[in-house]
Image (cartoon, rainbow, N blue to C red):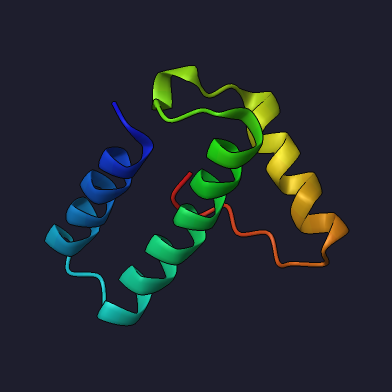
Length: 74
């Protein structure tokens, strides 16, 4: 399954659970940033290709850039 498709499915699940529009936007943006990083750095477009090392690389990227690490939705 494509990363963008899994993100849309995840957001749909949150909508069904009646999360607020602001929370939905936050989840979408944070996950989209991670998926974009993984795609650009590793060429991964399918969720099945992802491995823990790719997520760890993203976390290190955030740490180097002093960005807040958010694990919700992962």
